Image 1 (tube, rainbow, N blue to C red):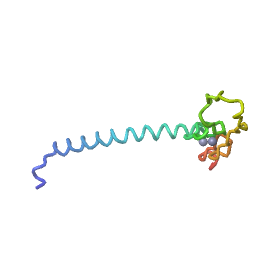
Image 2: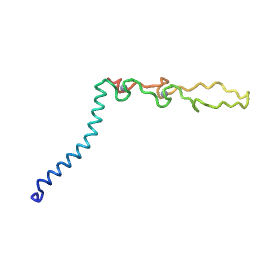
Image 3: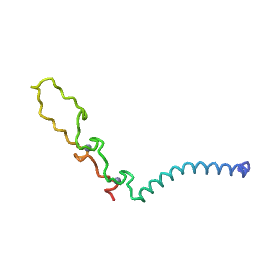
Image 4: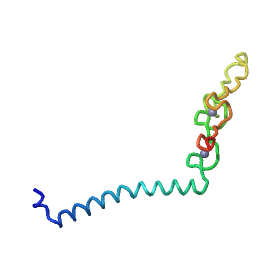
Length: 107
Ligand SMILES: [Zn+2]
Ligand SMILES: [Zn+2]
């Protein structure tokens, strides 16, 4: 029965829906504007216009250092000499330490 719904109820429902949708769309619009502003400024959203993304595997060094930079060298025996272990190059970034930004390279 639509007669039971008064105009004020419809208005209140409409306002509530409007406020709800406005609240939801506000965040979307905000992110959309910020991203579009960045792109309009010529800045890449992914790399910030650096056109490079640092490799997360080697942290930009291109080499994987096992044990970190403060590896303890055992001073137990002189005869236990090992050949100097060369740091294996990062296979993730092919030892470059960074990737070219896919967003920028596509442009
Ligand atoms: Zn790497
Ligand atoms: Zn980029």
